[in-house]
Image 1: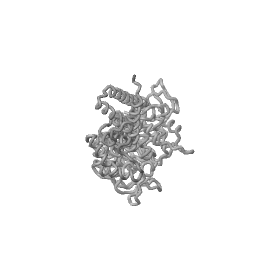
Image 2 (image 1 turned 30 degrees about the horizontal axis):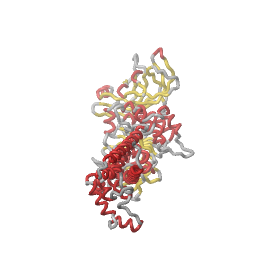
Image 3 (image 1 turned 180 degrees about the vertical axis):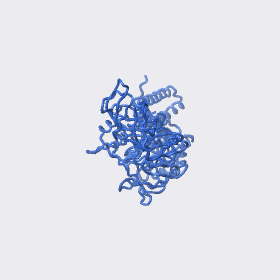
Image 4 (image 1 turned 90 degrees about the horizontal axis):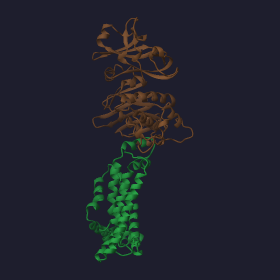
Length: 354
Length: 228
């Protein structure tokens, strides 16, 4: 449980925050310049608020009334910044070992971290020779090795952003499952929010404007605008059931048991995959369609519908939760409404691997 | 032919010894000050910057005169040192070290400061979040990443100390065997018309300068990575 209530003056405005964070993964979402990074830096002890109170469980990190201000090195908060910021004069391993604790029984061991993040082959290399995604993983490992009580992660911001995101997300899920360290993840990408978040804190111009589960936040204007405009992938974990190379497809099963056909893969059965389905590549039919070439057709129920700027976003429960984006005209024509049972249609080639 | 005579040896030893000692003495203070100037925001910073830079712009002889006033037996600091520690400064080898230290100090501080300023402060912040206190952060992140600039500052300071003349002759005098360094000795020899002996000392100074630069280049090249 993290309690943060503080005021921090910034160049354009004051960051004013008053939140409780208790989910295993909290997504900090908002447009650029909303103060998300400043929020993380304040938690980590790199910025000093005017006044306020920051606690993790019972321990006080900052309190203007008690006159407490723990320096960053005493906070035990792991921070992975946007630019990864690896130390250029140390190898990947030197970086990872920099803040390592050498206690007898540590929950996070070097072996387990390098294995989970798949960075063992990179250990001897210098940061200059690593790709953006590799740097991000090494920075994540470096933060984990300090046995943090809280992990702060700022979204990778670079030219290869989409690519990077899709590489770091699965690792973040493994970290959450393996080490049980609470994570606060900053992003302005709604796809990240859907894929990761149990809880979302929406920030705009230095204020927290909403907090809740991703689904309950779909009606938030700032969130919805991003969801309706930007690229939006539905993303699922799945496992290979069997390959049919002669038919050009592979059958997979998602975590919640939905069977899908995707373009043929070379992976063996039981291999874990991460699937992405763009929200606009899913078709809706109000009655069971017949004679279609699309390989994936399954029923679902509309449980939320949001409209803005000529676009309609549906949230459909079909074993997995799907977000479907269509034009206002299509939604009107089909008389779609919440509670309605529809059929989702997905071409196998609309499903890609993340 | 180029083997130094015993007299020449003593001049070379005195010059190298005082220059090394003055460089070693200003290294911790100069580095700390350079760091404070590069990273800190504090009251009186621009005043300190100006005072440190003074020996760069003032005539060395004027600096020497100021030091003489300060460190002489009746000077503010000089009388105190003599009474409390029984320490004589002026016209001893110690005066040579003081003159060299003061004159070379700005070179070290300037180079080190510029070097520290090129290090991304965000890297230092990250080191702090990884559990390193300010000292460990300085010695494991800031210093290794700015080593090139700091070392070149040290070489500059050492070279400036080797060649120091104006402040030395005022504060330490020109006492053969006690305070006569290479520069002072060359000057006296030329004054006396012993040109060939002056050229021999000139050759030794060139050798020393050459050695210092070569050593620093070697040191820099053996570094494993270029942090650029």
